[in-house]
Image (cartoon, rainbow, N blue to C red; front, side, top):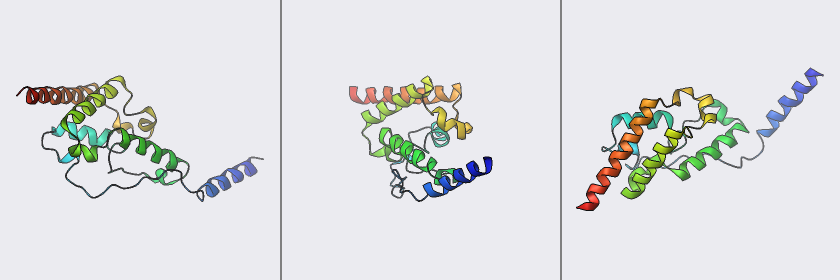
Length: 156
């Protein structure tokens, strides 16, 4: 009984690999200079936090682990990356107008502070992406400074 069940499960896993994926992770264009990682105004500590905890889903530099190439996990991963890029694509940071960057940084702060980001499902496989309280404070301080400098520019 267990042998048959195991065999059936293995056969299902093999067959599902033949099903066309409803989602795909499309690589982004070559670096255009718009990546947040290339923005000299973003502090190095913020870039490091974003690289480790955010950019797999929120950029076009997604690192796909081995299990991310096996259906149906690959489908879920691609869907999550698609949603993440749609919400905030850090590879296109420089192409956004300053008010949009301020808003996105505020949302990143709020989502990190509430524990919504990085999502628990991502942290299960990537525990190193967990943000410490100090890292959340670093992101939020950067966001506050970005907002403050934006206000100063508008008042001139």
